[in-house]
Image (cartoon, rainbow, N blue to C red; front, side, top):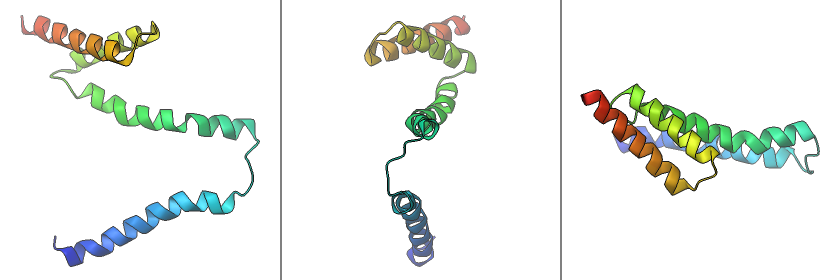
Length: 104
């Protein structure tokens, strides 16, 4: 695709992205006081991050079994209140162990 074909697509995409971000600021002038809407907006970043991360977790390893094992270990370690590095190392070790067991 040459630049002159790509340029209109880029301009439209930039415009749509800009409008999606600006319209709420233009339409909503006062503080949102509805508890339901506030709680909904509070959890949006977490749900988006989960929706983007979870599929990558399942397909990041050689098999779905080792991916689920690593995911479950990560959830368990995080539930125990450990830090991010501990959770990541524990999940990686779980995946490694399961992959090695599956090779036998």
